[in-house]
Image (cartoon, one colour):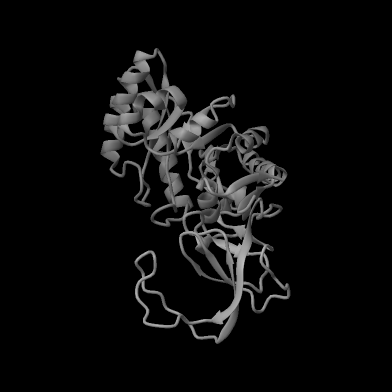
Length: 354
């Protein structure tokens, strides 16, 4: 059963309990993000048992997989109008920035005699989703409050994912200020102030503390990899190997390190460049770019070098390894976020709980 990803539910649980406890001590609830592992119910259940207040995903398909887990579901990616009915049916809450989409959600929720909750997204400068103009923010709030079938329960922001903007006191304080002004102008109470993702955790880790008024974080990478994402630092007392990729060697030969002949484009339309290191022992593993982002895997044997790959093959240099690899042997890799995302998405990679 190779290639396969070995998933440690115990390590995921430990990470989740450690990070959720850190957040709880700072007055913050955690929406556990499940998209990186495609909403596998067994993992999502562990996150809820560890104390997550809700589970959050970008894909309707993943919410369907987790439908039986009795906890509020948050749709992370802005809803498509074409999916409004499914959003209302499968998500309790969604992140929104477009009034036309909210109107569509209002209509579908009203038809089903439901109330769909809205977190209005504010762009604080990272330039992904969210309303950046303050006048538009207040106009949108006014419109939402006049709609049936939807309820404005929070405001939120996203940082670092596109523009790399790091959460700081000045930008997070602006989010809290906007919340307070909305409450004052419209005489309403805003329940949730969602202050971003795993990139905000460094504020808790370094003792600086997050801005008062932020009461929710949407956390995924920090739980599955044990690191915050503003500066990429490890979080104390967590595991970074909750997911391991195991591959099998299908060829091992000594070959030149530079191809022989005129070099044109590779299978992906790129012209490769090679360093001449002489004759090297090269192994091919039965996995490729269709299954994994090879830039996002790290050999556990630190004497192995990744040379590259094609759709179905991963080529590694095992010359310097102290292990005498042979055909049929297994090679293990740690995965970073892109590696987990790609292997868990691939139907060709087995998923095994260990």
